[in-house]
Amino acid sequence: MNLFAKSEAENMRRAQPLAARMRPSTLAEFVGQQQFLGEGKLLRRLLKADRLSSVIFYGPPGTGKTTLARLLAVESRRRFVQVSAVTSGVKELRAVLDQARDDLKLGGQQTLLFVDEIHRFNRAQQDVLLPDVEEGVVTLVGATTSNPFFAVNSALVSRSQIFQFEPLSREDIKTLLRRAAKDAERGLGDVPIVLHDDALDFLAEVCDGDARRALSALEVGVLSSDERPVPFTRALAEESVQRKAIEYDPTGDSHYDAASALIKSLRGSDPDAALYWLARMLEAGEDVRFLCRRLIILASEDVGNADPQALPLAVAAMQACEFVGLPECQLTLSQCVTYLACAPKSNAATVAIGEARQDVREGRLLPVPVHLRDAHYRGAKQLGHGQGYQYAHDAEGGVAAQDYLGVEREYYRPVDRGFEQELAARLAQIRAALRQAKEAP
Image (cartoon, rainbow, N blue to C red; front, side, top):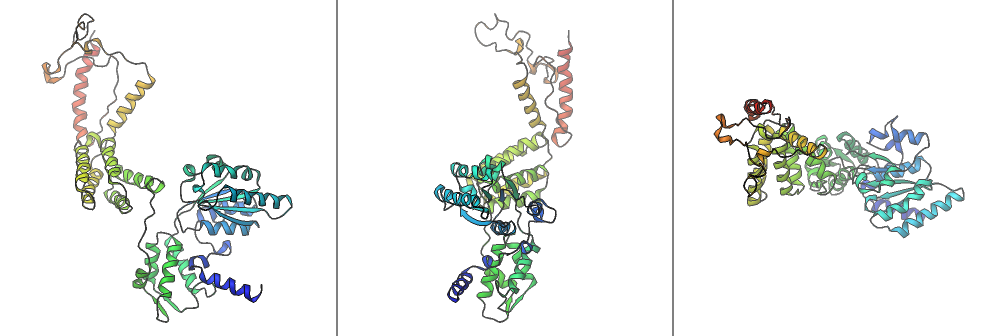
């Protein structure tokens, strides 16, 4: 490389942000994702056996998907080619695949094709990859922040190993920050820096496992300071980090995962966890109507008759939220969530309607007993409709001993919690009276 080329390369390197310059050059430098990259884990074994096939990396931003794809090319001695599903079309994709096929025929280097944001390719574009992936012309590494089982062609998914990336741990983030502060060649090591522990703790917490965000804050803080050595304090860290942008796709995984966590926390009677997930969804801009619908459903599905006040409270919360709006309706939602979490739980009504509908779908349809049929039209008496019907209010205790179904069935089984415990005792007496009609000759 001549001096001019070296100068160009150096200028390009200096123009890169710290996160790009600090990308590891070897697999040994890679931090995190030990669940599949640790010693003895699947991806490590595939590399060791030289049996790397097409893979899809799925996970949040800043967790190393692009970096690991580059390292896989190095480790497997393949030519690395990167395309972005945001900017590339079928024409560009075919050109890459044709070149990879020609290289393979001529005995050249195999190609690792990295497709960033692969979920943004439509189905037709994804289909273009299928033949060459299946024949081994390219080793595909797709990266996506969306669940590949929903966002990627099922045929492509079936031909790929799925590796789910997790946010980096606090210790992982601190390791990367210390490494960047010391590295004079790629990082900020040519500037004397005093890293305060509370500043590292703060960045490790606030970046939500996103290495890119943490390194960007470190770079801004160091380069904007006139002091030498740079005292990288918590105050400087707070001034350097951008406002937290909560990863949340209102139609994607984060939406459904957070909603699932909220409902399961309520069902599990943990008001603190439920409040956290509620706050997370509100901060991310979740639709309040969606939250209200879920709370109303839970009031019937999981609380039921163990606390009959739960449903009217949830409905009232929905009406209040419509009337008041944000930000004040967060108080109403908090009240409703904490009440539902602490309420006694019963899914007896939920199980009952499920079993009854299953009988209707799968069993023989039961005829309406003659004495229960409508007798209010001309000719009904001639058909015998209503004959023998006993008016319940005229019976002792308001329960007439007559058969209302024609067969023996018990769908509703109250639990021994909350108000449903009282209902269970009452129902036992009612069923005893109704049974008399079934047992009468």
